[in-house]
Length: 431
Image (cartoon, rainbow, N blue to C red; front, side, top):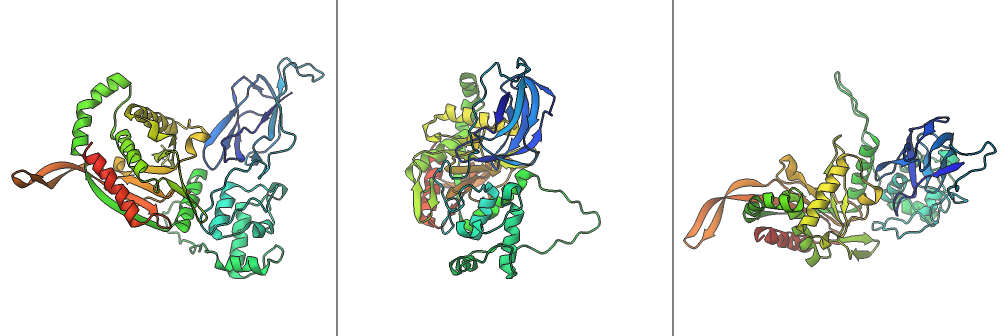
């Protein structure tokens, strides 16, 4: 009997949700045929079967959250004897499910937010529950007192929200009495106020948020609660860059086999400026600022269904223009086709979003936590501009773009943010 386990989906992912079984008990399955669809807070994926055989047992229901390393299904091999003795090696399986804290990566927490893991060993907390707990200032000890209604006492999102509502209203909650220290922490914590019910009118249509949209919403609210957002703007003259691209794009595509869009050029210049201002390529851990050695560039990508995903170009500072173009085109194509791997949307240190692809002049993007800054690229447009010539000022048609940098004012001040933008604009104007 071959045992299929929940695979490791990335360094920071310890569990995944089984969203759909693609094979039922008794059905035959071929090698590399998908047996289940799974989802994390990062990406959706499929679990293939490494063997041919018949599905003998499915150990979880659709919607169950399963720790990495746990057996989820058993496959009876085609050549397996009646006695059940396998003719091929059995997939090794951990004796116990991997639990929170069994592998302890470094956890980067926002300023003033608690580390939830040490006081809750053996209790599985979904990424969404941990995000809500941190944004509401619920400490590990307090979290451990909240009873869970999920499988095996798992704390669900609804359990936590119900507890927070009870704490806010002062009503007695269904958990042990908290200490004075915990009560003081709770009273000092920011409270997410729930808006009143929205009135419906004739002809209104209700569209339920899908799972990804709910995760995006939670992440955006958390980011605004954690970081004081400030946005600075600068206008850059891209005329020289536009002319260079027009002259080189046909040759570039012939030599490199990739289309040369503006995106990899802009990314390359943004990375070049980051190397001079490492305080922008950083994260916050309590009262510490982590200056990242690697520049892993997140590129916000719109999916066909309108949702957003951020694949990451790892070691972007090590790529030349051709390498950057290949990475951008490949990740964008696979993101829209739902073919990204979990590791390809993790580990970003700085994010760029291209608002100009939709005609927007500029915008004020929200920081992708735990990063400290995000850059928005506006549309490249022809505008009349005053230029200096040897014969005096003149008005000419120039290609210009507005760049917007949103940064975490806890650690990035206007001077640093402004200097980064100024350096980037200078690189673009003298491309």
